[in-house]
Image (cartoon, rainbow, N blue to C red):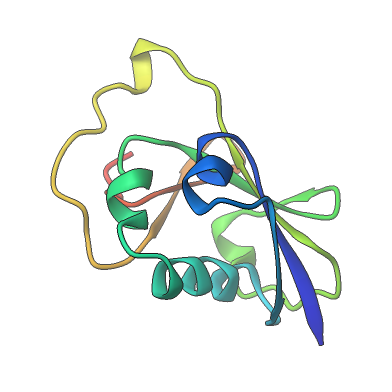
Length: 111
């Protein structure tokens, strides 16, 4: 079934649109879709922090493979200098990490 991936902030600007209608089932597949279809996205996301939501639910690491019928939102987390230590070479995949109870996605995976 087709679902919408909704992106916000600088990610929306980088991708050139705010929504993608894709045949997928999980938040993990949404991330994979973006990584596989947009050259340079890992580099762009390397210094950004995102949270993933399905409907009103904030996705945690144990829910990355959560099958859903709802839209998947990838939302930038506004942060200050505390998070600016996220520096290094981008990995070949987008790695999920936690801060509090929210899933934070960063291409470096060093959060």
